[in-house]
Length: 209
Image 1 (cartoon, rainbow, N blue to C red):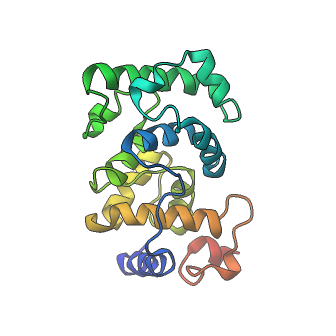
Image 2 (cartoon, rainbow, N blue to C red):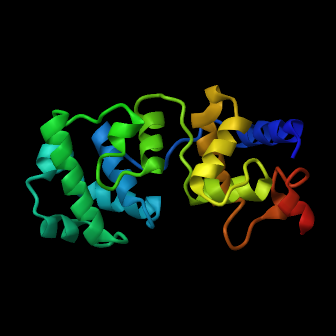
């Protein structure tokens, strides 16, 4: 796909999704960490319900460590993979409490040392908390990037690298949200709304239909 076409797609995405941000509710870096860990295979709406009952009492690493794994599992049991998430959250909290005085580290490598934190989660935290340019590739970003041709790839890492080449670095973090919201609202997994998509005239997938 020509660079000019990708630039026009990005201009249209920015026009439609300017100022969008994460749908997860949080008030501290630690809360966002927990919310993003919980969001794996779980909707943001469901995560917000869970964190609304969790964060009033357990909103720091040390407070979270007051819970046993069984107690935390019970608090988040309406979230997918809740047992493994509880185990990872408590293991990450131990590292934060013992090595970082309860604060989040500020590098990709250090964040990815935390149990339950992969590259996507680390990039979300770098972007949202530390204002560092990063593109987190979740299922929506992966799907939209491949369908539109903005970045083709068989793995999230390949798509991330393709998007980093296609998007100016100053807009990486914003574009991450544009792609997520476009995937949620228009370019859905099962029934993409190609007929009303603002990218319809440019997107190769829409043109095939």
